Length: 138
Image (cartoon, rainbow, N blue to C red; front, side):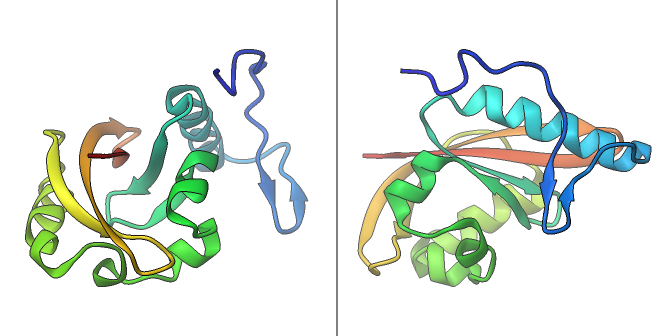
């Protein structure tokens, strides 16, 4: 079942201050990126991060699978999510904008560990690197 089968093209985004309408090009770029993210996740445990590794969006399935809300997940350190033996590979992929899949042990909110195949999709969009990561428990 796809969540976004009936999604209409609408780049408006919600903020704490309401809906953004007429904005500059940077916000328009973010709107388009978030729209692509919504279309691509289609039932997967997916996160979208900027080139510094800051998570800006997670799929509802990611929330269900790992237990954190977006705000809770954004407050985490890498070591709160990736087990110590997976930190090096996760950081290597992040720092070098690598898209190849890798295996990592990840914690959920209940502090339980599980192995996940992490598949990255790296995109350079309007001069910035963006990472879309899909997590599949194995």
